[in-house]
Length: 122
Length: 193
Ligand SMILES: Nc1ncnc2c1ncn2[C@@H]1O[C@H](COP(=O)(O)OP(=O)(O)OP(=O)(O)O)[C@@H](O)[C@H]1O
Ligand code: FES
Ligand SMILES: [Mg+2]
Image (cartoon, rainbow over all chains, first blue to last red; front, side, top):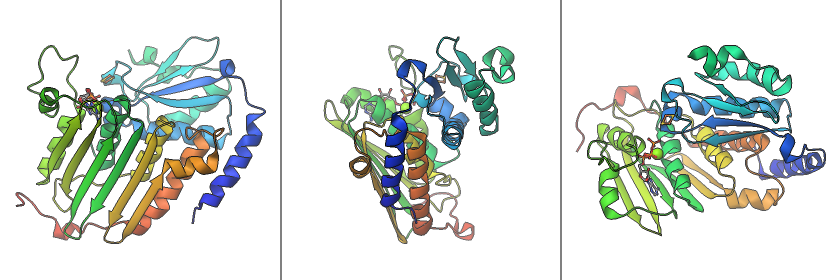
């Protein structure tokens, strides 16, 4: 069984990581649209996949957060990626199976996965 | 929406948007298949005239910024199972949204991923105090972010992916113990009084 003790161990590990963390201005941000339309279209498993993948790879320079309406209902689930010093990239019609490629190619290797972007869908 | 937990995610997000500091979520299942879902917040609340409109998408006036879908869909889903939606709200004090569902009704969506939903609400608003309680005839699931924060201290955010994973796994284990299987043979169709 999972226990609160385990959480203590996670805390200790994370506190050690804090020291080697990137500063805020170097953080890559992923924002997943979680308005009603996004949730209905499947944003929850997509967000979950981003969190899982970032956790699995131990990417301490990536923050994953949730936002409301991004304004493109028919393209949901949608995520915006902000890499410092680069232009914003909007990924659309996301499914959990598209997420690992975005994390690996874009967040780690800085190559936009153009097939999944809003430009490719329009 | 295909799952009740998706409605829960959506409706609880209204509490977040309303500036709540505390959000209490409770699900209670009784032996007859009735499920009561209550979401209570201390956010900005709604005036009575506004409250009268929010669950009905067709009476929304033109002056309203946009037509919300969350609450009307939630009401519809509850009523389709023979249940109901009740909203109590006071400006400046907060809101309680209570929905009743008959889980054995054919039109009742499955509960879906409750652990993922709760973990996601916490991840999305790491500074809000959430409590979560799900009781069934088989057991109880409980979580309070205050308790987690006591352990994690100030430096570790509840928004961290690793904490999200832990919360999800922790709740999944508890939900499995408390789960009530709905027997499809016992499904009820039509009106329930
Ligand atoms: N807990 C709450 N506290 C305060 N106001 C609320 C609360 N829940 C709902 N409201 C008000 O009712 C409106 C309608 O909510 P509803 O969820 O139906 O739609 P919405 O959130 O505006 O849009 P969406 O379709 O994305 O859900 C909200 O915009 C908000 O003004
Ligand atoms: S309501 Fe759908 S993207 Fe805003
Ligand atoms: Mg809403």
